[in-house]
Image (cartoon, rainbow, N blue to C red; front, side):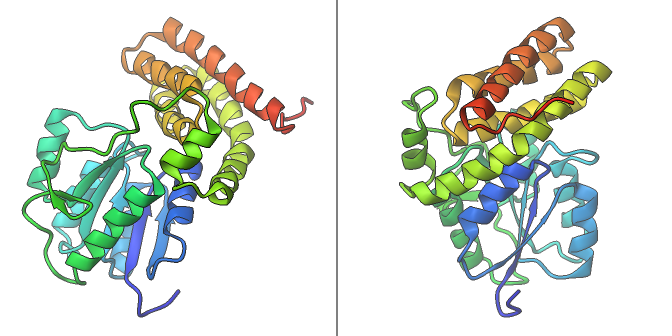
Length: 267
């Protein structure tokens, strides 16, 4: 780490999304620190100064909103905060505005959108300065619920389109990210099976929420749609629907692994 560079804290419980952010911000003059929960983030925020907090909302344990509420009452209250989430309800958006978050980035975002947002926050928020009263995204004043959406014309399962839409045409960056995701998928499939067997709707919803964004970044729109269906079924306590959605999603994930020659062996 370069002590002359500002520190940025990423709070993200999905390893594939955390890897995307790491790759996107690689080469920028900052020190990126990652953790997987609000509780871990609180410990890190108490141990050193950070210029920017980037946090998901749906986390194991305390939520991202609760983390930002804690931050605003802590000695690091001046640390800027950006929410990085697949969706924000209207009531949550209002609370985030009250907490003076800098912006809300909707997963999945492109590398360029993420980099532009971080650059804007760091350029406008010198260490120790207060967060702005209005929420900003990529340097422009916008309402808190103004989110960066995926391209509407994104074709289903389009690797080349994903390279263009999310990775700025950098095929090497896309393939590096894809390789890390494929390495993680066997664990995701095993976790999904275990959560289904345990009927843990909350944890299965969190897994689906994360996979939805990862699969879109990879260009697998149909599989991402299955993840969204699973997330909604878990939220509605529709266990039959959740079971059916997971079976389809699990089969799609295994198909991806088969296509890459990385399907886990049994026994």
